[in-house]
Length: 304
Image (cartoon, rainbow, N blue to C red; front, top):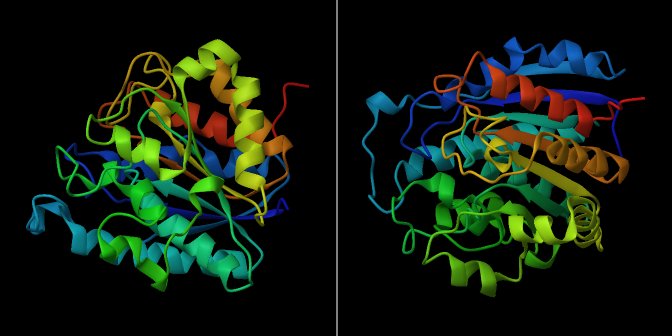
């Protein structure tokens, strides 16, 4: 399952939320020596640059319940094609966000690649938030709070039907880990969706190892492999301050590394993305540096 060649794809998408700066996430990760550090693990690395994303300053918001929907759909279509192309070339796509609406394009590309070959994929979503709002339930209209809903077949058809099919991932093969901040109208959608959701209370009570074991089993069951979507707000803001929506009580430094190490050990991960790194609100690029460390753990770096 693991591939020895990696394609880095930047997705400087900031249209899914209101804070400026997350479009510089791909640059911050590259400045943190991402490419060289991955290569030090023995991978061959190709940096495919960034997809084109329209500049927010020049755009109308569009529908207030799903802001910048048309432009996010266009960027997602571009990203899906790039991800599919990487997999076709036997490369592992590593997508750098950008806000979490990036995942709509990434997961569409991975799911389409395997769907065309008669297979399905699993998804592990490391995040403080469920990201399962729809335009009807969202208090803000920000699409970075909707990507998982779109991926499992809900949400605006421009996104949920991207690539010509829905869902991208079956809810039974979709797992959220680290949940601790869910909008009131979003809670029943999470409970009724069929998605497996592990809150920080689950991690506190059971330990991260048990939670990740179950998450990997669920995402692997009957699938070709796992796509990993890491939102840096999964981590506690003491270690990852430069995120758009920080929430206290997140995964500790070591819990975050253990999650990535276990995902790597499963040998089931075929694609990965890291999102919501915002250098404008970061402290000396700490969050980007931490994100690169976690990517390294997810790709096989070990203490001994």
